Image (cartoon, rainbow, N blue to C red; front, side, top):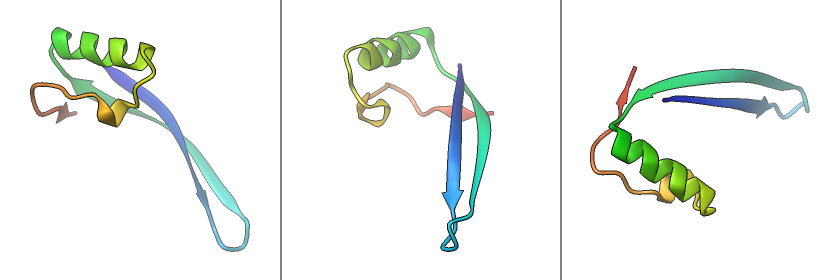
Length: 57
């Protein structure tokens, strides 16, 4: 599962830095389904509980 997101760092001077990022995560299909259904129901990603720890690549 690939999470694609973009982050922005804003400095005190008002200057900012934006960068797209992709993080690859290996999770079981059941947990993937739970995440997708939770997001479709409007839940925040970090509020969706999955069974196992996520292994970051």
